[in-house]
Length: 103
Picture 1: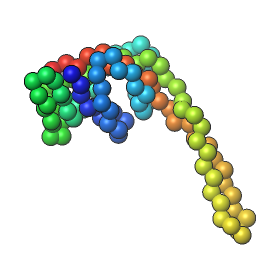
Picture 2 (picture 1 turned 90 degrees about the vertical axis):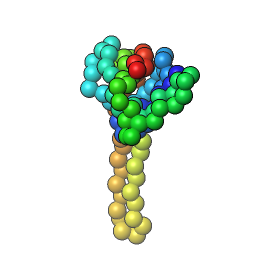
Picture 3 (picture 1 turned 90 degrees about the horizontal axis):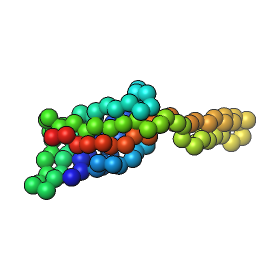
Picture 4 (picture 1 turned 45 degrees about the horizontal axis):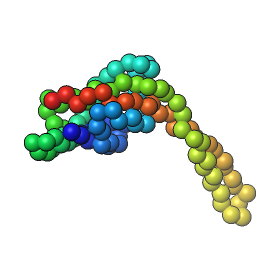
């Protein structure tokens, strides 16, 4: 059985035991939480598609760790105008493990 969930503005295909890096969630490390924005659930009997979300389905997850992604460099430049801007960004993320898909 698998599900497609939405968190942090992105969609992920998850099964029990899946470990994901998602946008930072506001929970402490080791804390369990549920994702109720489930778009699709596929099981042996068939596929259930929500409009927009499947009612009564929750995906339980546990926060494993928080961190920051690798640095991305942004460089703006205009030729002949002596204009240069150099900036870096590190996106915060949370690593989560999917515990169960509760119907």
